[in-house]
Image (tube, rainbow, N blue to C red; front, side, top):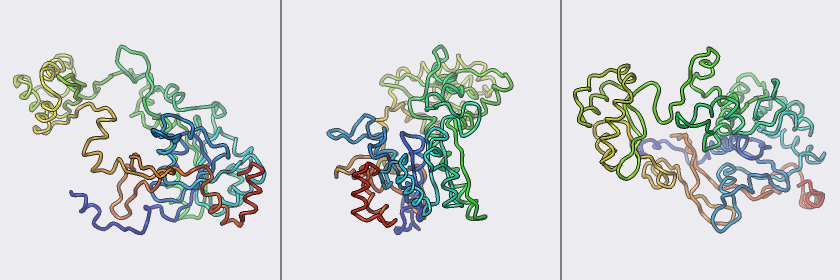
Length: 403
């Protein structure tokens, strides 16, 4: 399918399928902001509520070259409005609750109980907006024996068992190079918000949505938690694949490729390509039993060829394969650009940089990165003004340190 065909019926008058949904986001760092990022990318009006001193994400390197703008902050807080508000102060609390009356969703990712202590927890918000959807993202969840314990992404990765299976077979436990627990927690937070909004549309009922980073990792563990509960063995496979062989990372003359086979028909093709058609009839279970033998055959064939040669030959034969790219190399791939996964976005200082685009594509209501992260408090006048806060009152609140 061509791009133009996919978007043939696209509307240009909406920012995305969630246009009209209003989200208040009281978050910090990554997991909570990621939940808000997904909803903002989908077209919701997301108002990020940030302490007047700014949250830690603004100060996390690396920075956009020649600026003090954090790439971290620009990535996860794009497409949002920004209001600076000290929720620990009574006037800040009251303004938040006033905003809550106009919102559909609240997202927060503070330690469980923190926002309730400030008077803006789920019960507080539900009193002023009974049908509010209130999403809490935390390390261990709102209940359970460890719910009060601080829980960050690498803690969840290691507690869950994920890190214990990651890495080379003869190595030690290794965390993911990305914020995997935070990302999954954010995605489940956004998905939970959407499910709760659908329930509200049908029944008029709001609710509290509780997402733990730990639970997200366990849910996405491919059944490993069940295997652990049954005391069945779990093996660290590194770059190999437990269900099929040969599949691995193979060294070539100028780098690495990753590829292999799952289907018997694909193995017949690959066996012919690597010069061993005599073993092409080996079925899946036999190949797993003879994994090392067949893996070495493929490795020896790749070693004398370039990555481009291997990828070209395997791809022409209909086999799954890729060059092992760095992120810099991936950023230059035509496929990445064709899918709008890098979009030139104007930042607050007027400079454009390529930001990672939304993953889901909508044929009727296309989405995009509309703008970078807003400056701290950039939308105070607009958002709080809609509540009746005039310029003089805004100056007073600023002088008092509330905004």
